[in-house]
Image (tube, rainbow, N blue to C red; front, side, top):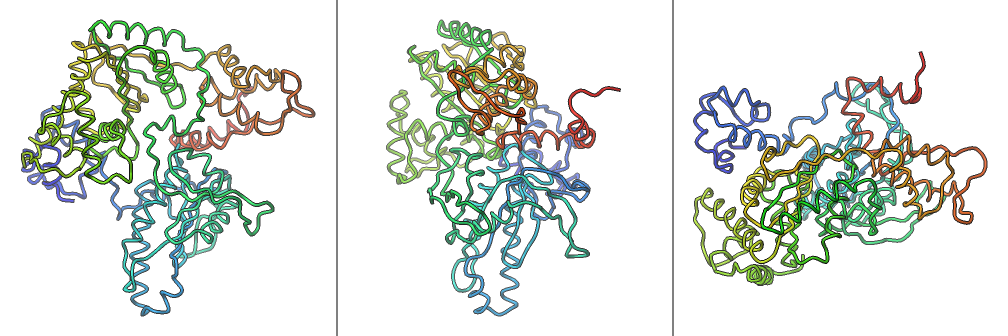
Length: 586
């Protein structure tokens, strides 16, 4: 990467000399701290913050292993893994046609491509087997979205490997992905053949799925499909017989990422779970909306840990306001687009304009013009600015200077927001700001400056690690969602079962195990009801025999394991405590 070009892209090329004089190159860039930036003469807090955010968003260096040896657990662990098996299609015929040295070079390029793509989503290449590659997601570092990371990596690999040439045309790959509980970490073999072994059917299933995948196809099993929800578009391949499994399984081919922008909606069932224990928060939002309608714009900052109900609360607020005349603007950040400038705003414009994947550029331009005309922004210059933002070709030219072009785009987006607010009160919902890119954050700050003078309510949700720059302003209300109490948790369980009462012992266990986090309550209750351990009898659920053990639903495994992995220094203590139980007597 070229430092000067990177700085120009951020609009901070004035620091190029400072970077050069202090011998800061691309290799050192990722390790810079705020103190380093201050020492080389960057006095502006805003500029230091912009640089640090941009450094944080840099793609990984493919030459640097993402997982250091010291970070790999020394013993075997029981984990939920998403396993990918990638193989070159037609490699036997290819090796027969190519000289061994040419084949070796081709395999090297293929392995490098796999390593780079997998490292980009923090996966772990466990083993190279000629033209086959075994990859783990969830070990040695778990993430709350390991299944999604695996599928995105699979789609990226199909595209990336398809760009490699063999001399007889482009390469093709076949990819199988499966998710399940395994025991991983035992050292198998010695010397260069030593590897971290996995015990369980998941790797075998991934390999079997790869074998039935079409060229350039990504096939997933049912457990993975449940975890990724509607984040992708699929082709249902029905049930297939898998060698080694007693019963046929249902499989899907992943086609592409879906057009659904809201992760909350993509990962939840169509029917929203009941909203319980948030009456005070809802009342506060409605009061702020009342002020906003009168022209006294408001900003509400909703923070809380994952699963606490931030998106559910905003969805409920939108339901309550559905019958009132207003304009609703929804923006969603993505953990996979932190370095994509203005990604939430581009996605919103494409959704509002009704863009379809198959639309030609000219059709998209017509839809954009129609969208802008509805908001009163239909002059050719504005159309050219928005076309530039969306990457659409247009005859009208804009300034060549990137900084001037950037300012025109930001000003146009602000003008559109103000124009809409002059027509009707605006409810602006901005989700998951912890994943915001730097340019979107700057635009959001400019919009926040305008809000007090507009009939607009801006609702911004985020996790605790994000530090919003607007706290302390008169029109800003900070709302931190707390966990549900025992009574509200019990009420939520009752509503999730449709009013059918669970055995008291089961309800008590759910309350104890979920710690008042609504998502955990929902997933554990649904998992239990669907498990077959209970049977319906009149208006209640009953069980016979010993009280069933409440297993952690697969939808929560990755999230909980990711939290545990972040506690690396005390992880072993936590594991020992989990084995002993919640109550320890001395």
